[in-house]
Length: 175
Image 1: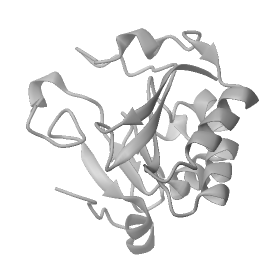
Image 2: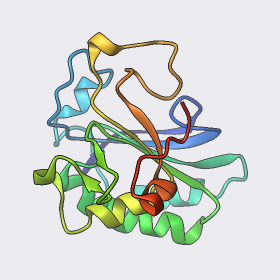
Image 3: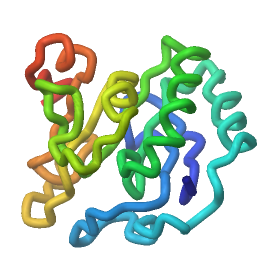
């Protein structure tokens, strides 16, 4: 997996001050995407042990609320493989920190997997279960609303992952 950039003190992509990892690669190709350069899976740098450890170290700062995953598309199958062990380690080291993930895919709240079944892998459900918040759904230009917090278009949901998986129905984190 490659990553496009890391924002070390981000206040736009989740609650509090966060570290935001923008992974490379996305097949959605949303019209007027804010990060079109990251559609290419080969864009940016290799996500290796060095950058993973740097993120893990920086997450230890008391003012950092958590980690946000964006893209590109974090839940593309080839990105899931690299993110799963990394997010496991984030949760092991920092159980009090939150993990937000932004995806253009849609969560099937009954199964805990993606509605786009061809994008599910052996780790999809386990990876999603590690997230605290999932912002799902593609960006749709015609539903763009700049007044929305933490999302770009009205079709996107901000989901409380744990409560959703417990109930088997979508529980919104915030309206």
